Length: 111
Image (cartoon, rainbow, N blue to C red):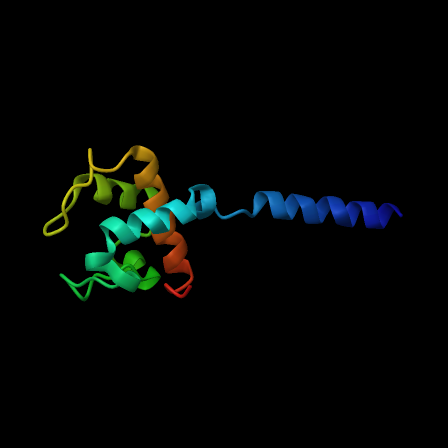
């Protein structure tokens, strides 16, 4: 009985402390906002302006962008051909989109 209890406590602890912080945002809302504002250039994680800099996990890591705060900064400020979404999207929407991008990158942009 004691071993069973300890096993359950360990399983609960692992589940609680191994949660990926990428899933903190509202992913459904992130997908909706991404589709409305980003998919024209980044459909399926691609990049129609610069094909070498996609939203794939490998490219995000390669260009040191596999980070929630860095993605949020890029969405807020824009960069080169990408416009700034500061003032056009709320902070919550930007957070949701950034979480959606990281989560989608982790899944290889496969639904």
